[in-house]
Image (cartoon, rainbow, N blue to C red; front, side):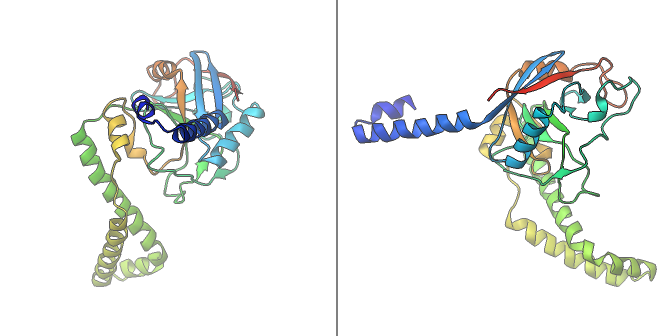
Length: 277
């Protein structure tokens, strides 16, 4: 940017650049900043404006003091820390957590590949694809990514696997209207008809997937090979913010001792969540 400014001699262009910088600054100022005060330290997060439903929902819950007193109830080292379960408030040490919710979901808001699962990303938890094919988010539960660092070779292999997953998801979607027919074919042991249908649907799924093949962007590759993250979650869970201060606190939380349900032995308490602007 400094080299660019030095190279510009026109007053008009300088004025235009200043105006542009002012707009960018205003955009930054308009982003909502929230702070998680925990018994392990504070975590400061910005919420993305391009995921407005998730942003606004979290703002509402914060204003309602929904998160105050809840726990980071699920912690997995080199993966993520998860919180937001209302049932975790004052929960007994042997209580299994993770089922609490608001009674509603939020439609997925994938701004991909701009927002991805780099270290420090804030994303919405959700139920699995088998009962939630639309990938709708939990009304309150969230996680912060810690992840791990990958080699370029590992990312290449992951691209292949993720493309296979896309084909499978498209195949499942295409097969869903035929489930009654498939059941009848299986009951009648009609192998030929089953094979013909499968081959047709696989071909259609592969053709659909080929239109938009999965590829990591240069920005993703830089992040995943330096600071790390959880790239296998990209495109499946809504990323709606990122940590801007207190990543060391997140790292310390991910290292706490946990039980067989991934719940910390000693509670990691979210004392209060506040909106800073």
